[in-house]
Amino acid sequence: MAQLWGGRFTKETDQLVYNFNASLSFDQKLYKQDITGSMAHAAMLAKQGILTQQEKEEITAGLQEILKDIEEGKLEFSPEYEDIHSFVESNLIAKKGEVGKKLHTGRSRNDQVALDMKLYVRDEISEIDGLLKELLTSLLHIMKENLHTYMPGFTHLQKAQPVTVAHHFGAYFEMFKRDRSRMQDVKKRLNLCPLGSGALAGTTYPLDRAYTAQLLGFDGPTLNSMDSVADRDYLIELLSGLSTIMMHLSRFCEEIILWNSNEYQFVEIDDGYSTGSSIMPQKKNPDIAELVRGKTGRVYGALMSMLTTMKGIPLAYNKDMQEDKEFTFDAIDTVKGCIALFNGMISTMEFKKENMENSAKNGFTNATDAADYLVNHGVAFRDAHGIVGRLVLFCIEKNCSLDDLTLAEYQEISPVFQEDIYEAISMKNCVEKRNTIGAPGTEAMKEVIGIQEKYLEEN
Ligand code: ARG
Image 1 (spheres, protein in one colour):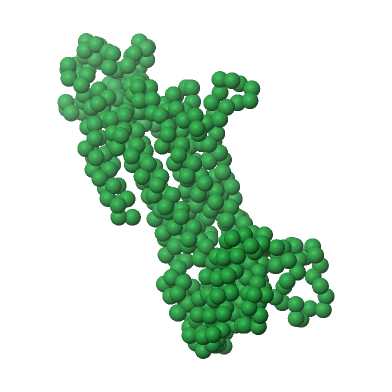
Image 2 (image 1 turned 60 degrees about the horizontal axis):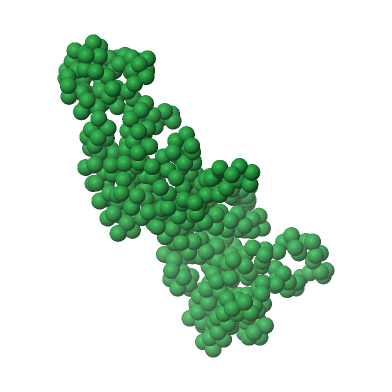
């Protein structure tokens, strides 16, 4: 047990207590951030004359050696150290002797861990953003290739009106675009540096907090030292943003699972992203989509856990906050894995265009267009709705679609119908004439794709 705080104790810590309290097994993930933060702290101490230039250089060299040793696997995270902060400091002292003991001047593990976690989250947000961008790029590619791939659009999971694959995927493009902007928001708000807040009340040393903030790429120092060490809002915001990403992926997965089923046969997931059954030889299961859907609960759990951990904590730092890490790390890793796998799955998935179009043709998805035809010929919409309702009923009895009725049959129900009804309710017209911005019509879709392309170039 290499603890930093034995001085006022007369008894060794009980082993079980030590184990319960220790966090190195999981906060070792923060080693890089802990070392980066320590270097900035040492540089600031030297600038302020609290360390000599020589001392700063020795400390920095020692920290660099520790980083290298960890990365080369020469330095192991042995459980004798309580946490990553003790680990780095003890190893610095072991390497550089007395001067290593000066690093912690004007710093507490409370502001240190607050800093490490912010640095970690900031880096991870950049990674998640990169993955989301790759996903958006794949979506846009699929959209461009499927401007004329007709499929049924659903409400209440009932066929409603025909849309295109481009339009359907475009909906998810919007969702993941918002997710990126949510992540950027979290980054913007968290980007104030807590270092120099000490345990909770700052320090009497003449620290230059603006300098460390600048060295570490923050917009400035935090303005209240108690809040600095007790704030985990950014983790709640992060987990909320990650939960939303998972919710979007999960909805998309649910659709793909349906589309890939024998009943729909709209898509076929690539063999590389499917699995078989140990008993039923015919099976090809969409496990990846199911797992992504399933892992959503795990990320929601992290959010609930974090909110619950924070709800009763008095100011300032309390050890409860150590519980912020495992769930957050797990949620971040889960989301990154899910985005990457999902991207691979949709990029290799085959669209069964004919099946989609046939499905869109059945189910009276052009009934609204038949009503619109009547409106365009002077019938009031409510009356038109009633007329087409009767036509649909007639078709159901005859087991045919609106396209299959003869003109005489149309005219029996309303004399307004003429020969051009067939064109008006054709799949091509139903979809491609919907050209208000945001609709599936080809012109509207092309305009939106242009906007999304520009967005990806600029962001
Ligand atoms: N391992 C601790 C955490 O993750 C670091 C801060 C410890 N501070 C303290 N006063 N014991 O929160």
